[in-house]
Amino acid sequence: MYSLLLAIIYIAFISLGLPDSLLGSAWPTMYGQLGVPVSFAGGITMIISFGTIVSSLLSDTLTRKLGAGLVTAISVLATAVALFGFSISNSFFALCLWAIPYGLGAGAVDAALNNYVALHYSSRHMSWLHCFWGVGTAVSPYIMSYCLTGGLGWHRGYSFVSLLQVILAAVLFLSLPLWKKRDGNPDGSTETQPPRSLPQILKIRGIKYMLLAFFGYSALESTAGLWASSYLAEFRGISSDTAARFASLFYLGITFGRFLCGFISDRIGDKNMIRSGILVSAFGVILVAFPLDNAFALIGLIVIGFGCAPVYPSIIHSTPANFGKENSQAAIGVQMASAYTGTTLMPPLFGLLGEHISMGLYPFYLLFFALLMLVVSEGMNRLLAKPKVSKN
Image (cartoon, rainbow, N blue to C red; front, top):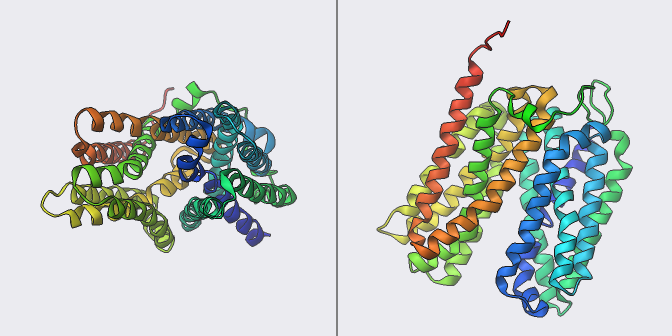
């Protein structure tokens, strides 16, 4: 039972990644056929991001009422329906409408699954599961590329991925009896107390530090990936083909790094994995900024990816230990919301800085968020190490 459910969760993490890279791979073809400017992709991603933030904040309430298994199954089905909607859409307005369930489903399943794994499985599985998310983000562009080069069109690419999500949703619904906490509580719920409001969650000792750390991580990862090619090509004078190839290796560094981290994370511990990951990322940023040889910048991108690898999974896995099992679902929900906020807002902000000031700010922008992560995560560790002061 344990092994079967774990296998299903691994497959579910692949499904988390499948939709994430579809729009980017299809948009160069889509925007011309839809008759809209290329920049309109930002509107769709903003709607999706807003939906993920909302559903992440609601994940505590949903998971306590329905359980992690049912929330996961419903959320995957919602993303499958949304992807099907994309596959039959022929206008930008229709895509915006279908982006609403797309985002709502993605945020709820992300928070519910991450909390379930943090409560019931070891740190190594958290690393490997997020590695499988990377597999999903890598597979879907190949599906879309196959459809585009084969003359099937982007509509068929979305329909294929939607079908995969429908199959997975069916598997998840059939697996609901397996989603039980080992102490006998149904479906992954951890206690009977009512869901916490956002003000109550923010009063949890140390949670604000972790929210800032998650914001900083997501800002660094998303900005590094989105603007790597532009920085290499426009500021460092590297050819566009080489720049694109090494920018993709940033994501490969994250995925492969998480695979390797799974072998050592249980022995090293979440705090040390977070600390070492931030420091490796900062070293990679310094290599990118090194002015004398472009080879350092190319290698630095891969190093940043390796450094990013353990941070996200380790932050999630450490949540029950840091804030208590009774608070973990609520904490992970707001952490996801903070992460999505960083992903949504910070890359466009750098785009404005790069356009109006200089693309050369790229490594310094990344270094700011690396240092922010280091300061707030170490500050949280010191705070949680202190004994609680009684209010009596």
